[in-house]
Length: 404
Ligand SMILES: Nc1ncnc2c1ncn2[C@@H]1O[C@H](COP(=O)(O)OP(=O)(O)OP(=O)(O)O)[C@@H](O)[C@H]1O
Ligand SMILES: [Mg+2]
Image (cartoon, rainbow, N blue to C red; front, top):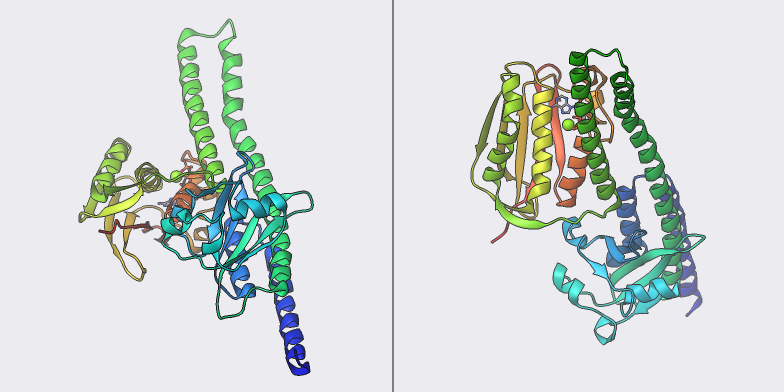
């Protein structure tokens, strides 16, 4: 290398380290796991000048090595991909705790084409490094398909290794934050129905209790027990979704049938408040997890009833969505209820968030929309809302249409 080339090289290395420092600072300030992972893969691509990047993490519960995010894989496809610890490149990196450069994957005996085949992607070369916290290796960060003609060199390995260890610490922090936050809130929510149950049993045991009062108390106990059951299953749902352990069971089904079926479930509730519900939709075949989409729709519909006025209206409609690279359908659930102020709209999809005005006279945990957001995004879709105070709200979700 001549002197000029050498100083060029040093300058570009310095620029790269500066960029790495910037990125590390950004990572450390992100506690939301999903956006953290997105930031890491985009940084990995940028710093190594590659076409795609991915993160595989060891599932703390099962010990399996699984794709957590990849810039070239859809979120709903990724969940199925478990990589064997033995015989795979990622498994080798994780067990040995060392980086690996593969110049030509087709010459690699441990290379499995099955992931490429699943996602219709062609991997040519890759650089993978372990993601290490101070105690252990938690996964592996891979940069795939170098852009341009240069091969991966020592600088690339160093840069990606530094990024990976910063990322590993940030991931651990986000996980810890998620757990502490969630457990504290969960215990808090469980205490109210438990306290009500305890008070009821004390009353029931009083010898002077009139027989007709005991019926009332048992009725209260029953509804509090139902609330506990619902709470615990929602907690479990959300905890699974947040940790990425939820598997989507994707099938093709008729959306209009599902809309009608969901409306039928909530009709008795709507009738109680004399609220009308209309479904307006063409026939669409979507590719999604039917049970989970139904769960989302039921929450949106229940909200549209709970936070609606007497004799209000609800409209459920579907149309093809624009501006997507593959065809999506957009479902809208529209109500004539209290509406949501701009300030509250920002927090709508956060777990445990409930608007104070309505929390007083309606039952709920504030988990429904947080769960809905996870489910819709796991399908590669989006959930949004438009609302005007005292006029009503519309919640929109997008889902992939079945192709062919
Ligand atoms: N259609 C709506 N109109 C007005 N406010 C709404 C509407 N949907 C939701 N909200 C507000 O957003 C909050 C969060 O809704 P979310 O569905 O997450 O929880 P929830 O209905 O309170 O409880 P649950 O977990 O049982 O669904 C509600 O408490 C309510 O204040
Ligand atoms: Mg709800």
